[in-house]
Length: 167
Image (tube, rainbow, N blue to C red):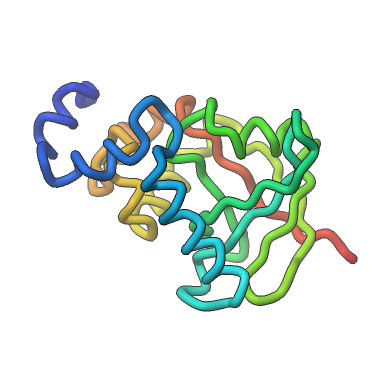
C-alpha cells in the first residue's frame, strides 16, 4: 500500500491545483464558483450522462443543497462516491436525510442513497476514479492500483448505491 505522502509527492504539481481547490476538506471560493457552473449545466442536462446534480436538504439550514457528482455504474447498479471522505457536507446531509435526495440531469429523479458496506467498496472506487478525473487528486490510491489497495482505503471514502424512488 502506498502512503498518502508518497502519493502526493509522486503526483506533485500535476494535482496540486485540484488539491488546493479543496484544501481543508471543503471547496474554496474559486471551487465554489466552478461548482455553481457545474450545477447549472447539470440542471439543464448539459454534459455527460454520468454527471448529475445531487439535491439534498441541509441538515442544519433546511435549505436544498446542490452538489455536482459523478455516477459510477457497474452493471445495472449506480453509485456515488465522496472524493473528500466522510466529512464532506453532502455526505453528512444525505445521512441526516435518511438517504433521501433528488438527482437532476435535465429531469429530477427522487432517489434513496444507501450506504455501501466498506467490504464492497473497492471495485466501485476503482470504477469511480476511471470516470472522475477530478477526484484523482483527492483519493490516495492510483486508479490503476490493484484492487487490494482500494480495499485498504475504502473506509475513508463513503460510497452510496443509488435507488430510484417512485414519484
